[in-house]
Amino acid sequence: MEVDGAPGWRPDRVADIVRWRNGLPGRGSGGGRPTLARQEYLKEAAARGLTRDEAVRALDTFAAEFPEMTEQELCAWVAGKWRR
Image (tube, rainbow, N blue to C red; front, side, top):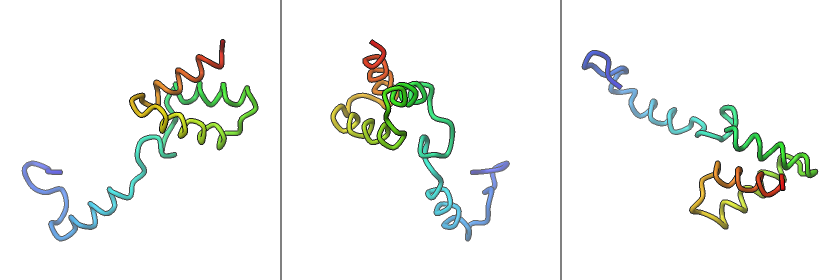
């Protein structure tokens, strides 16, 4: 990060800043609101009697089986199947 061409922190603190940044939660790791697709998936899972943990484990299993699909695609696909 630079502010007017100068580093935004002292050079001797760069390692601390990098360590802090690497420790931040990633997207979807409990650090924010789930995507709309995930919310719908969890809603459909709950309607079928799955706990949140069970639904997340199932989603992880689907992700391992279908690595070419994004989480949003998987959530929409499974929720769509359940709605039929």
